[in-house]
Image (cartoon, rainbow, N blue to C red; front, side):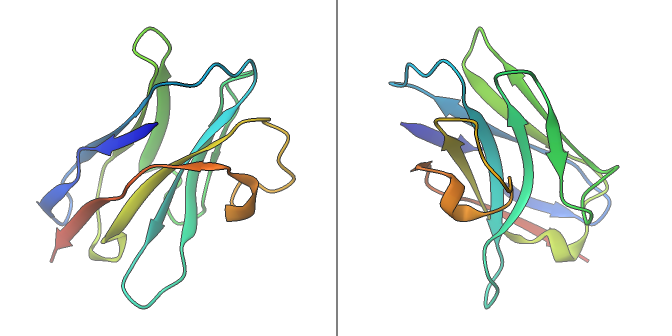
Length: 124
């Protein structure tokens, strides 16, 4: 089970930290990603972290502003979002690739478990 939380309303330039609490899984190697979907747009990959070796990936649109991290003791993955912009407004989802063998980290079909979304709204 994936439980995403931490969304909310923030002004442009502000920060939010999303959390994805993972429970009920016993994978050896897996990856966790954040996706987002804005109204009228396709879901897109935002960031990903390999739990196998800690490698991180970011969409160009968030590089330098967002940071993905994990707390193994809490089995939680975080997405720290700084310098937020109105175009970051979307529903954010976390997802797990239970094999960590993806060809493309940003492709939805690589992920076999999804959490519910959390709304992030950035006002101008």
